Image 1 (cartoon, rainbow, N blue to C red):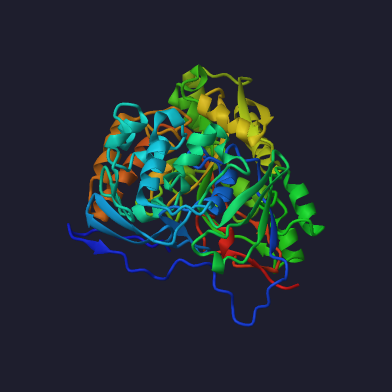
Image 2: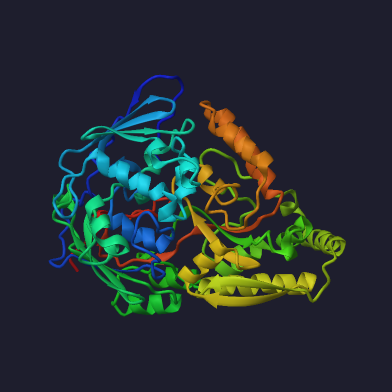
Length: 536
């Protein structure tokens, strides 16, 4: 589904554009509502509106409206032109992007290649303290060293060849780069605005972006409102006039607001209700497989989890089939690997014991805990964000550990942005986590467990596996690369730094009058410019 370019020889490959990257085409005969306002749940309060700093799904859902990168992702999940109208790969580690001459910031200033140079350097600069700096920066020439403060930003592989031509040099061959640069962290930033307002540049009235919408209102823990940007290069094809994002963490409340007509879009339904609402709202319930994984992090620096036998034992006894079929009960398949189905660049590597009868798994887990000196009655703390979904999963896992091993899980709940900080600080023993792919390649999942990744919140490091990943990323042969990344993934998972649980799906309720939504988007990356409200 993803538009990607594979370099099979050192030769220039030019993108064959599948389309102009315009907003969704409205089917003939469709009558639009006179008021193009869209109200949607967004799951949680975003931690930041700065594209360089934001890392969570709720933040990036909004940022895709306020900012646009070199490329973008359309409603079906395909990579399409964004600010760049075309691009080509001139050698295995060099890409050249041609910017569209009519692209502007929301204040009317034209977008030039230097705006990308500034934005990308700012993103990777250690002073910005982006939790994604190494995660994405590692793909650019000298990116990791710049993110670590070992080299100056001027040595980063980004250069303006002329006013409308940007060159990106990668550390290794990176066939998925056009997909990667759809992420707004690698987009243009209006330098004068940042210099004028400092950290306040992201506030309504101050922010200068380049997306299809502009930020009009931000009431913390209440709502964020964006309105159509008349300066956007494709404004003529943007139908929505206003989008209101509501940070609703309580999922039953989310459904009640939708049923009462106060919202048009439920971000995610709670577990255990899928069949009920499928029967009640067959035309408005949407569900699709997502390239993502729900998992739990161990804090491997904590003395309680330094022993791999403890980490393995706890993972072994969780019955993912029951979790999938009876607890979440919404089509999410069990996961026994970091790499999930549908991911390009590596194969899933399920644990050998995943096919064992549960009695055998429990017996082996008890032996491992005994060998590690862990006795029944031992208590571990578990951190998760306020959500009926995560609570039910936690209750199930706690029951599995208590009834099968005598291990006690003590839970601690908090706001999502508080949990995100807690994970990065390493101030937990076990924490709820989840990952939706930023692009369709195995490296987006390996970022969760790589030694120098800022998204590795379990703090485990396997240098032997790291060497395999680096060797794999140097390959121009996709098949050879896949073998090496699969080996690395298995090697890391055998260290048990995380507990994979289920592969994501996102069952949600969407009003039938919301047009432009597609169930073919494997990363759940949607832009409001692709939506429209049908007359009703």
